[in-house]
Amino acid sequence: MSHIVIISGSPTPGSRLNGLINYVESKWVADGHKISHIRVADLPAEALLHAKFGDEAIVKAVGVVAEADGVVIASPVYKASYTGVLKAFLDLLPQTGLRDKIALPLFIGGSLAHLLAIDYSLKPVLNALGARNILGGVYAVDQWVERLEGGEHGLSPELLLRLDASAAQLVEELHWHELKLQEKAKTAAAEQ
Image (tube, rainbow, N blue to C red; front, side):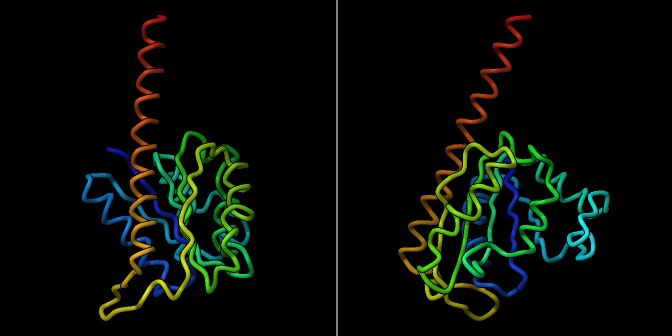
């Protein structure tokens, strides 16, 4: 099974974004995929702000991304873009840190006015980091995610359908990517 890392750029532990993350994660865990989390706000602020590539926590987080097959980039939208703390972390990834990774954006914002934040602010950065298979992702509006007791979230039916489709698409892309890598390995072995 594939290894999926979820990178959350939310500076707020109780963000509605967690509703989206928890939902797709439950789908992948049920399918047997390995899931890792990087909550960027939990990384040392000084290391992020001063680009301390050698900081132990940064090295560990970058290593988790390197080991993953799929990368979920999750963020609330502030000022028509993803969070600054997420940008600070992405800046610490190697130039080709997302090469051969399948990327799935999950964004949430206050209104549909920032619907294109994924396409115009995130995708160019992911592309610059070597990601070539960036899925369309999901943009949700705050009102589609209800906070429930115990830290749970209620998601609107439309949002559930879109998350189901995106979660399934990531798994399908990871499957095809794995088959392609196996075929390359067989070809290389046959040529020797």
